Amino acid sequence: MSRVFADTSGFLAYLVPTDREHASAVDAFRRLGLRKAALVTTSYVLCETYALLLRRHGLERALAFRDDLEPLLKVVWVDAALHGRALDLLAARRKPRLSLVDAASLVLMRESAIDEAFAYDPDFDDEGFRRP
Image (tube, helix red, strand yellow):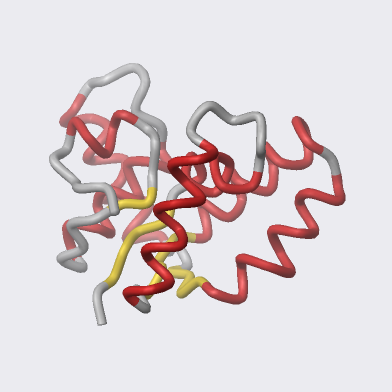
C-alpha cells in the first residue's frame, strides 16, 4: 500500500468548493481512494487545518473534517525531536514563506520515505515531492 502525505492545502482544496483547486483535489482524493493509499499527516497539520477551517469557514466545516476525513488519516504526533528537526530545516532553508508546520511535514516525509503529497502548497513542489 502506498503512503501519501496529506497537507492542509489539500484538505482545504477538497473541503471548500470555492477553492481554486477544488476540482483537482476532489479528483486526486478519488484516485487516492481507488489506490487505497494510506494518508499520513501530522498533528501540526491537523491543528493548522482546524484553525483555518474555523476562522474562514465556521464550526460546521471543521466538524465535517473531524467526522469525514480525520478518521481516514494516520496521524504522526509531533514530538520534541521532530519539532527540533523542523526548526533545523527552517534554519537551513531560510525561506520566509516556509512555515514550521510545513517544515515538520517535509522532515517527516523524508524520514518516512514518502514521496507524494496531497498538497497545493508550492513548498512541496519546491522540495521535489509529487502530487497524486
